[in-house]
Length: 360
Image 1: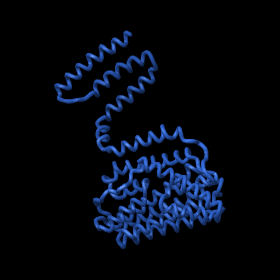
Image 2: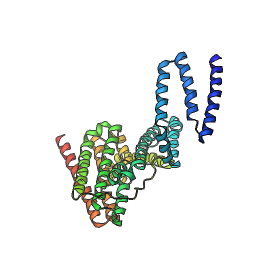
Image 3: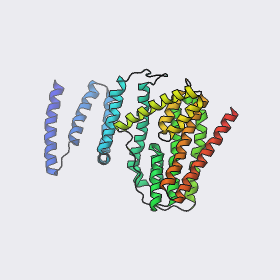
Image 4: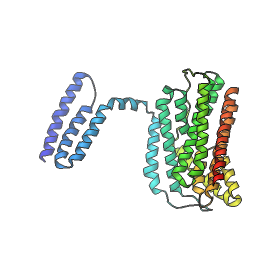
């Protein structure tokens, strides 16, 4: 009771003083008041509770006070849609996930809703991180950095935007070609990371071809930039769909479940060829869904070799789709550059895969 009365007395005096000071300075802020009350409480807790916890909280509070101006500027850049995306993440994780059943549903072994939902949330979170990185760095740091960050979200979106810029003629084609190659390289690395996280048994067969393809794309980008010294250019921002809207997450989960079920049906009816055909078709629209589905089909439905082959076929199909985008929307030289880059990446990956399977 003594501490409580002392706190109330301290709070009344301190808050009145801060109110008069704010009026004199013509400002409106509660930061100092909150810091003062927190200091009193931490001092009490250090005596009556755990001194280590009190010290850690004091250091953390001091750190927040030091960077508060930067935090204010950062908060000004956040849009309502991005705040809604964070709310969707929390709702999907803390509300929907606990009530989803953790068992398979449907014919042919079915799909596990909880497992699919967790994977969808993780993939969308990664994409949303890249989306925020582009918002913060993309327009300020130039074409190549934006392309690398964009590859985390969607390399196809990057190539679509670069093809549009190539058609307008406002940006040097070598810069756009290099950016498209870097985004493609990041997409290969992203698929490798998904496989490593979901089914490490496939990593040996999948990682080497994809890393070889990524290195070829990086080499292509380096060659494009060294062909002639690149100049600083202003480019329009790449327009990405927010990957963590409610409908986006639900659509991703549904697509993974459908592809997984269809892949299981085709693999049982037509064997490995059916799974590879499913991966090739799905890869044109959603590489993530295709990759997740193939990893979940091994080893129960597909062997490691067949699942890995399906993933590589799907990635190759998506890479060939980039040629269609570049050829349809871009100018002649950009179309040739993207087409050549895609063919080189596929060739490097295919040779590496054949070399690995030959050694096995």
